[in-house]
Each structure stands twice: as structure tokens, then as C-alpha cells.
Image (cartoon, rainbow, N blue to C red; front, side, top):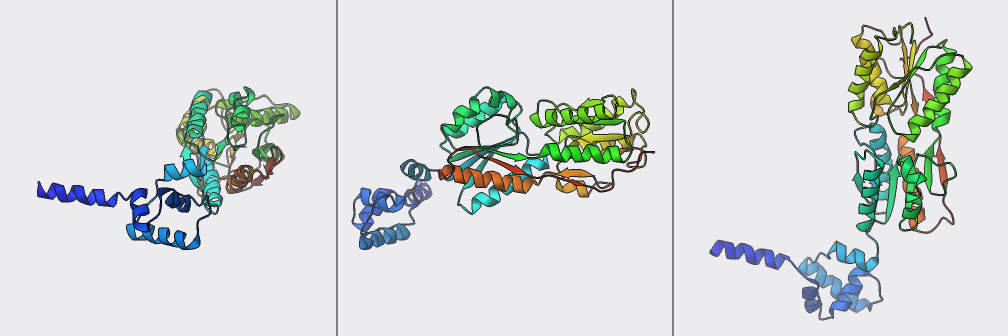
Length: 353
């Protein structure tokens, strides 16, 4: 019993309250609150007395209470479709690095599969009084329905990529059209006409790339070969794509009916490399492969992957810059910030046989 009493008293003494600080400094609770929150002027000598009492007692203000008084949490909510895709983790890294300079913490939600769950997490962040919200690859349905327009009236908001034509919201946009056009032109200039397009489901980015793919295939008068890997944003897409390559080989002779693959992201491209290897095909001797994103391991694959660099950390930095400006009311109207892309030529492409 004696031991239990000592532990209980120790815990009680550690829980220093604002009343304890007020007694120690010989001031009112209101004065301590004003010093802690720095929201009203306090005489220098009184402030020093309170600060010394806080230090002696090792008082830690309740962060929730402080946030309510200051009407700020110094937290930015970030929503991503899937963090296992290194594209998203690199963008988040760029966001976090910039926001640290402004003393903001990042709260992250990942593995958001559909429009309904995306809306749920947006509303959860708003309920928790985050100072701003950044959403990567937002669902087209939530943009077109006006959901995000309503959200922007309640909280500072930045969307990274996603459907943006005629949408009056803050966007940071990778110029994906330019990068994908460069990838298609590169393959065509290598003599490829039998090009397969590999995508996932339900993504504005994939739809955009598919439209470009079709335009180029029409120009060279070649039929479309479109392969859907289902969810394209999780690590499972590598195995799913590998399995798809095995399936389509029954219909198309890879290396003859398909001489090149153009994938919507690097994870899909790795699945293609694995699938071709399983079939005894050599990349790029038998078939060429282009990815998209330029995630870190694209330079470590065998062969090293030709891909489009999306400048992910710059995307993240620009999104963080824009959310801070929006919080500070420095923007008179919604902004669209564009980030360039670049085709990185490595070892996975060659002249058509």
C-alpha cells in the first residue's frame, strides 16, 4: 500500500496546473494565460515572474487549450491515395521539409481508396481544427461535385494534381501531358508502333495519359492495347502488373505484337520488367519499357528504368508554400502553380527490332 501511495503522489505532483503557476508567481490565472498564449500585453516584470514560475514547476500548457485560444493548431493535414507508392512519399517529404521551417506539423492519412473515404478524412481534419489541408491526387468526383469548393470556404486548401479545368481552387500541377508526350515520341522515334499502355483504375492522371496515348496511336495508325492493373497506387500493383503480363502473353506475342510498354507509373513499369523476365524476354533487347514518376528505385532496377521525372519534392515544396501563403491570406484569389517534368533516358528502351 505504501508503494502505491508514493507512486500516486508522484504522478499528482507531476501534473502541474495553471493554478499552481499562478500561486507560485503570485498572479491571477488570467495573467498566466496571457503570458502562455501571448495574446495580451503583460508588464515585463510580471511576465518574467510568471516565466520563472513556469520553469521552476516545469509546467507544460495543454496544447489543445492553447490552440483553442490562439485559434491555430500549427498542424497541416495531408491526404494521399497510398504512401507505399514512393511518388507520394517523395511529395510528402517535400511538404514536410518546407513546413518544418514554419513550425508546422504534418498529420498524414494514406490508403484513401475512393471518393467517399476521401470526403470522410477531409471532414475529420476539419473537425480537428487543422490550419490547412493538402490533398494529393484528389478524386475527380469530389472536385466536380463542388465538395472541395465548399471545403475551401471553411479551411485553407491546396490540391496537388487532379482534375482542374475551369476549377477555381488552389492547385499545384505537374505538367504530366508534356512528360507523357515526350515518352510516347521517344518510343515512336525508336521505331515502335506496337505500344501497349498500362494504367490503373479511377484516376484523372491515368485518364489524361490514356487520351494522349490514343492520340499518338491514331497518328501512327496503330491499334490501342490498353492493360488495366486495377489499383495503381499501392505496392501490390507491381505483382498485379506482373500477372497481367503473363495473361496478355496468351493474346499478344510480346516482342512481336507488342514491342514497347508505356506505363502510368514506375511501380507498373517494375511489374512489366518482372513479367517479361518471367517469360524469358530481355528488356530492352526484345521489348522496351517506359515508366512515369522517376522514384528512387527506378535507377536501381535491372535494367535501369527510362521514366518521366515528376519533380516530386518540388511538387511537395510548392504545395507547402501555397498552403502557407493561403493561411496568411497572401493570395487574393486561388492560384495554379505548375511544375515541369522531364524524360530521363536510361537502359530500358532500344530501337525496335
